[in-house]
Amino acid sequence: MKRKTRALLAGTAAMLVAVLSGSTASAAGTSGAPGIGDSYYPLDGNGGYDVAHYDIRLTYQPATDLLSGTTTILARTTQDLTRFNLDFLLKVSSVRVNNAPAGFATKGGELTVTPKAKLAKGSDLTVVVRYTDKPEPYRLYGFAGWQRTPTGALGVNEPQIAPWWYPSNDHPLDKATFDVSIAVPEGVEALSNGVLTGKQQQVAGWVRWNWRSVRPQASYLTFVAIGQYEVREATAPNGQPLVTAYGDDLGAYGPAARASVERTPEVIDVLAQSFGPHPFEAQGGVVDSGLGFALENQTRPVYDGAFFRRGANTSVVAHELAHQWFGDSVSVRDWKEIWLNEGFATYAEYLWSDYQGEGTPAEVAQFTYDSIPADDGFWQVLPGDPGPDNQFHDAVYDRGGMTLQALRTAVGDTAFFRILRTWAAKHKDGTATTPEFIALAERISGKQLDNLFTTWLYTAGKPAVGPNGATARAAAAKPGSVDRIAETHRLLEASH
Figure 1: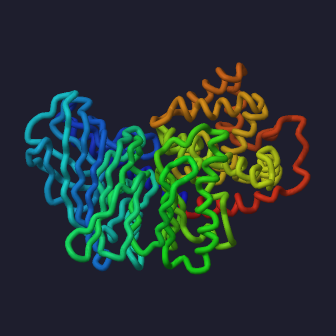
Figure 2 (figure 1 turned 60 degrees about the vertical axis):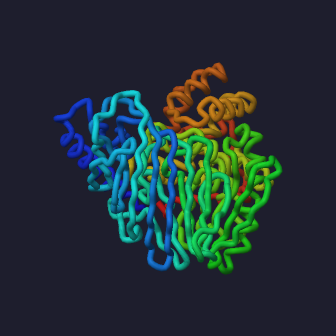
Figure 3 (figure 1 turned 120 degrees about the horizontal axis):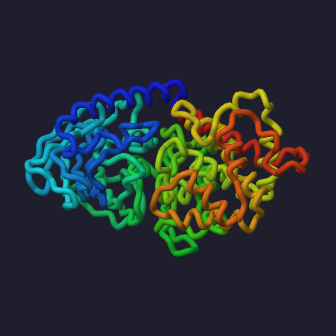
């Protein structure tokens, strides 16, 4: 997604939420707000209830792109409600609330539900939405959330556009557990998050794939990949199920993709030494030529084949797997804090570089700092609050990673890795903010760090002192990993 378009998207969302909020003013206190109030994407998520579990039961015909679904949502109300919203776009045939038929209307990515009776605060809520539609033509703010491929489809998306192939409360503030069940024609594979609990033969010619995620999961991290794949099932050294899948049309990229993604358990083991135990119940990855980006779907990232066009690329694997800790388990509370995802994933690439013998974090960070001139626009983007049009700017990745190296320089290795592990453990399955990270770093290190974070995250211009401190020398030579990391970031940014 291009930066200028992101700004337009955020502005449009702000106008829409104002209109929608105005429409509920007459029922103040009894309507869940459309949008949680995220500073960049105010229409993301909805107020008035908290989801505990999604049961998503789908049937998909690749030949016609016909998707039929029943999504059952288990939730609890957080206020009295006469109506509430879900994020959804497809054609709905019926909605039931607590087993009674409910009124409903869809507009602008919002499904507004009017229960038969008022819902009291603190009550259990069961919502069943049935729908049948052809998803591929749909766009939200001009962008697709469902991509049809030659052999199937990909329901994979970025956070600011609702994963509208199922109705949801689309914001990391409302995580839930998931069951995703997909029936497809025989000979077609259907992948999703978590553990494959089984495959069932349905009526002649159809097979149902059942997947379960038992840890709290943000809605945008839930995916389906349907099509022709080589699916590999194994057990990781730590005993977790490992499922990887490779599109049949990867061509020359296929061997390099397998040589990278099959090392997923090794990458997780290496990162766990710095971040703490892997936070989820399963491992794996999916590579498809029709995706156009990589995304850190919980337990099972997806990668476009282009990431492997120059050979094996374990850097992108390290990047997406780092998000299992930073982004998936510990999620942002507001999308302006995206550096807490991308800066940490970049630092994981630095750690992986060190493991590979291709440059230490200090060497990679210093070379990156030295290589970008002070008058480059890179230094004008503030990673701590880049704005929606720059949310995935390379400064969020690279300057975010340099911020963590500057922190490591300031507090020393022992305190630094204790900070990372404590952060991942303290906020596991939840959300967190930059001020909370700064407070934790100060408490563990015993140092005052406001100036460091202000300089690296919130001040335009190239910091006068590099990430390795005032006495550090310029990088003597280019670390072996730099070009691969840079190419990975270019592909990630371009895809957004």
